[in-house]
Image (cartoon, rainbow, N blue to C red; front, side, top):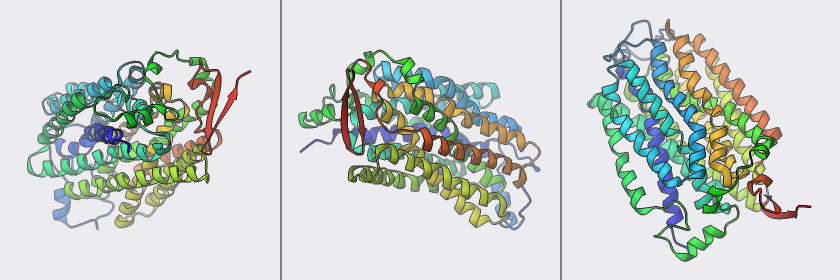
Length: 472
């Protein structure tokens, strides 16, 4: 009977994702209560959306007189730091103690979140704090990819990756929903004080009870340690000292396919993550409480559907219905094609509030498949360099998160209209379709030969079978 330490570790990783994503998105809703109300900012194209009292409730009046462009910058500057910090943090995650890197990541974000209300009094100071939060958050995904290689059994990978990344959805749910409730009762400042304090509990537990790898873990049975250490593709502690095969990495077709898929396939996810509360408020005219509830609903569903999708992909691979490559391509299809269809419908149905809301919710649910698709493909290609690969691929993968809030802010400077929002919708649709085409043609789920550059064997694993070809 194996122990449960790997499950507890996976749950801690899921909670870490909850924290980082929760602190990432809370300002998307909180900013509605932070800025002064400008009469021309909201859309009046659909006057049938609620009565006058509901409209008044939707329009909160905050203390800061920021333009639409400045509001967009407050949200997007985080992702500028995230982009800049991605490669260095990926390198640190691969080369240093991964546990410490993740601990610093969570602790720094908690502290910086607590000081947001003070920093908000001077816009440049707030932008600096948000930028630093982005830099310190960048380690999250690379670290998770590295730790998956250390703590997850190959045969259970898609399922547990789905559970671990379900934390991103749960964090978004808890953050948006609690932010709406806190703003209604305690004010916008309390959102950051409360959200920033709670993660300190996780930091203490993770520091005292968990180690970087199974080889060093104290609270684990020897049977479970042996299972993890001997699993296919296990990342051992010595991998941090392996020479990085830069030439082989950058001449790998599957790796370049992953770079482009990460760059383009993240557009819809980040667009909905950062701009949905604004769209719900300005176009669909939901008040702050309804906005919070509706905005967080798809992420709650994501927390259930992603593990189920991961379990299904593992099941199909183990049964021989598809390979690991096929599993990843199925997930990329789910995350790219259905959202495009939904966004096209939303753009041209006019003031159909209910249908628009349902399709927006469905768009986020299917977009969430990125976490069992291309966002875990780095670990498929090379578990020994998963952090570095994530750092490289997710650097351009964060571009959409940086440019979209600023683009929306610039376009809506004179007021929000459905026609103006269509431009942003089309950008997302084109990006998602290109990502799907690229990964379908060039993507792979096989461990690449350069994962073990000093090994005399070229190891491939697909269709549930291990094949070893001795190099000549």
